Image (cartoon, rainbow, N blue to C red; front, side):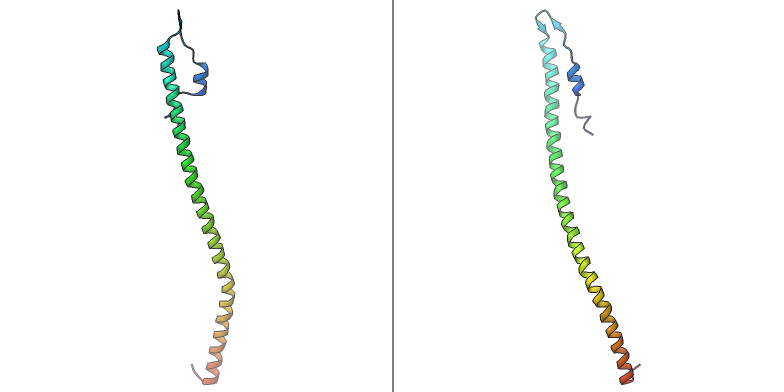
Length: 107
């Protein structure tokens, strides 16, 4: 995913060899390589910031979802508790209706 954005690997840096002039390494070659290293470090910093922001957003979403799960579980428990009462209530209403039919002769 991030491979396209970073030019050098750790192995590239480790194995980099500069040509030696009479006075040492060629300054332009070293500067050019260091520019690439600096660019990669800047890119790594940007990648880390992006990932940290993404992580922060995911943590916030996770907290919200956990809270929603807790709320839904609470509602489910309440509904389960009430469903037992609703069954009894329906049964009582059915019996009452049958008694009214018998007593008042209603069909």
